[in-house]
Length: 307
Length: 285
View (cartoon, one colour):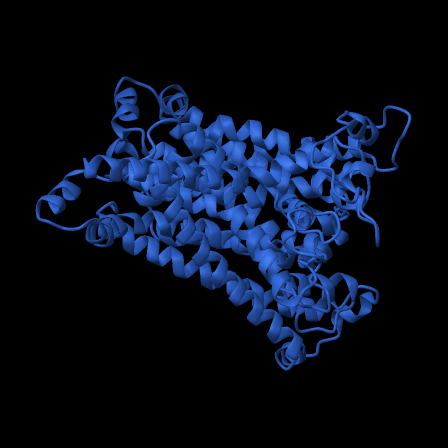
């Protein structure tokens, strides 16, 4: 079933319409994404510094990459980013699934709950960061105030400064912001679920856990993969949160790959080296997206939705 | 008998869990909104003042430059910049997205999945990583610290997701409808505007709202590529309230309210279509 079907006149030559329709999109993306990225690939092999423009032609081969790969601060930021993403995405999936199952049980006021659930999705990451910087503030934050007034803690807990707590607050903010993506899509999956297999399984004597494990969950997985794909498109949003809350500090305790790029590139104006790091972060994002997108395609085929 | 009590306990437990969940979702935002109406001395008070004593619009008057007390942060200019940049980039992204989404929904061509993946991958590039080369290219082209420079970037950021959503909405409209119109003598162009576009209108609108919010909320790129009142947007301006060691919590919260409110209103308008678009676009390839 192609367009040729409708317009027999065009059948003779190849139909250029889709190419024409897609060209504006690809032209803009080539200009704003592809060309700058090729340029940054070039600069990652130079000693380019912002304050000295002539260094743009100072070709140093793979020395930038050698330097960052032998830098232990880079590797700890890289490792921290991976750990951060793994914990955040898994928590978001599990919590989102729990929330979807919970809301699915409620019949009265469900629409309102669903709308409220979407709010964090619409918050600017910079606002989420600010909001939790305020709440977790050691001196005037609502959390420490509550703990102190209830007599649960004597001193001020340094949520954003302490070593494990700093990472915890950032993951908390990230999970708060993004769990709703999972909850919303998994809830949509639950709504779309056919009733018959569930009834049949109950008749056959499956317990609720078995029904969930073998019928509900496999049906929901494509929806989870959509959520994962949407999330992985934008994982670097966490940069905004970290930049507001801690700026990667203190002493690099909450430094992620993305805050490190900003610091090296703009604050230290070592553009060449920052671009080398940026390429590592791009590869990381692409790996995440590619992985979930192929999972999504596979799950789609399984559901028989593909053409 | 036992069955009934068990069921009742289940219902009560569900409601308690839901209540706790709503508190976790709503409380942080509400606390910031409330803070926007409180004076700094009440926010900083020790021991904490839990029940607000002075609620007023002073903070808002202050950041918008009315009233006795004024601050040196040009919030009205940031607001205008945000609005102009977000609206223009959304409009352009929708036009491009509609044409691209239609191509994906209605035509068969080679490497379709490949092109789609390519579009999505362009969106995965982290904002901060993309900002480095754009900074260099834009400074050559004189686009640093201009609204035009930001609009072009946001159009590019919004295209992939707009195409995903609009593709999903067009696919829900049966092909036979436009085919019938074409049998009756419409051109494909006429059939699109008279049959398919009216049916997909609400979907296109929600794609537009989503694009608007992306531009309205973006920070990583804007924070590096804007400098002055010529192009600085609200999220970047929010950071003006933080000095080296002090933060103007009251002013910052008031500004946060200004950023949140349009987002919340738009969420109400968009939610139903957005879910439909995401699931159709994703599940039915």
